[in-house]
Length: 301
Image (tube, helix red, strand yellow):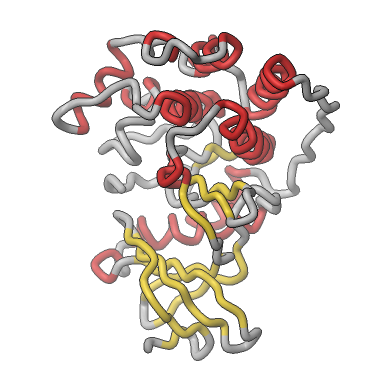
C-alpha cells in the first residue's frame, strides 16, 4: 500500500473526478482514518491545477463549519499535491433521491447553512450538485469538493466546469459567478430531490447547458401535483433566469427555507445570527495560493 509523506497510507479508492482521485487512508501519526484527495498524475506538473489545489486547501481551512468537509493537512508527495480531509461515513444525496418534503427540508436547511457561511466569506462553491452533498450515517449534511470554488465575482471563461444539469445561466454565458449562482444550482438540486428528476436533459452537455439559458425551469407542480406550494415557490425564485431575481445568497435562502418548514410542519422560525467573515477574503486566499490576480482556466471536471 502506498505511503504518502511517510504518514498517510492509502487503503482503497473512494472515487475519481476530472482532476483528482479520492482515497480512504490511514493517518499513521494520529492513528485515524482520513480521506486523501490526490491530483491525477497527468495533471501533477500543470501549474494551473497545482495552484487550484492549493487554493482549495486554503479555502477549506478558512471554512470551519459543521456542514462543510474539514481539511487536516495538505502537501506534495513525489510531485503530486494532495489534501488530507475528514473521512465522511455515509452516502451522497444522489443515492437517496427522491425524498419526501419533510426529510428533504432537513437536508436542505443544512446545505443552505453551509452555503450561507461560504457566501459570507465571499466564496462561491461553483459545483453544487447531489454528488457533492454528503449525508452522514447520523443524518448530517457535509458539503464537499471545493475543487472549482472561486471568489465571488470571478469570471470563469473557457470550457464548462461542473455538471451541465446544475449549471447557472451566467456560467453558461461566461459571466462572473455570484453567490446567486450557487442558489440556482441549489434550486435545481431541490427540484430533483422532490420530483426525482432534473428539469433539463439532452444528448450532450452543450445541449443541456443551453437549456438553462433558453428555457425557464418548470414548476415542480407541473411534474408532481402533490408538491407543496411553499416549496414550489422557493424553487421558482431560486432558479430565476436573472441572478437579481433569485435569493441573493445562502442566508436569504436559509430564511426562506425556515419559513417553508414553518408553513409545512409548524416548526418555529429561529432567529438567524449574523455570520462572521473570516480574516482572509476569498480573493486574498486565491492570490496567496497562485500569485496571480486572474484565476486560471480549468478543464471540465
